[in-house]
Every structure is written in structure tokens, then in C-alpha cells.
Length: 152
Image (cartoon, rainbow, N blue to C red; front, side, top):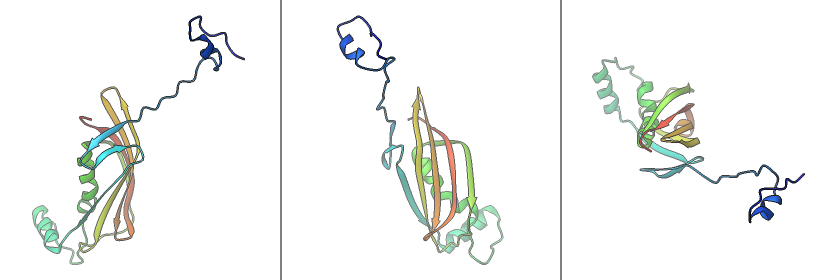
């Protein structure tokens, strides 16, 4: 059933719609980053390969005993993803990660961050993403995170 609509010069248009009118918004949150414009659905990637010398340097710095197999500690495995988060000026509120397999220092790591939510609410930009870290063609780490983009 159509409502009579308001009594103004545009009432002919309003009465042809359902009442109350459905408001559709096309506002899409887009933030500028070093990777270019980022919006919901964007995917960012960054790759990194550690040399054996870098692993030795890390071991020495943190006092870790070398394992002899050249396996990377988790901190170095997730570093390419934290680099992408830093590029976004991202502050996490929640993270959930799954480790699928160990990674050696001679493997190329590729972080993939897929934005599943990007929503401006006043002065705050909320973001959520799914992420993977690949070692070659295999997923080594996967998970989700949500938080805010600072200064966006």
C-alpha cells in the first residue's frame, strides 16, 4: 500500500515509492596507503626471503640457539604480514592465527592481506582482514584480524 506522502512539490515522486523510503547509500570507505587506494575487497601482498646470515644474526640478537635446520622462528615468519599492517598504520584489537607448517630460511614468504571490512565511523576507521603467509605455493600461516587504522 502506498502512503500519501508529504505535502510538498516533490510528493508525486515520494508517493510512487514505498513508505518509509528505502535509503541506499553508496558510501565506500577508501583509505590512501603506500600501496595505493585500499577499500573493502582489496588484497595487499609483500614477499620476503631470509638468508642464512640473517637467521644467524637474529639468533645471536635474541640469544636463541641455532636449530641446525634453518627453521625460521614464528616472529620472522609473520614479519611480512606485520610489514603490511604497518603500511596501513593498523592497530589490532583481535587476532587469530593457525600455523600450518614450519618455514626454512631459504623459502620465499609471501604475505597476503585481504580486506573484508573497511568502515569509517566518525573519526575511526575499522578494518578486518583475512591473511595468509605462503612459503612457496603452500600456506604456512593463515588467520584473521580486526582493529583500527590510525590517522585515516
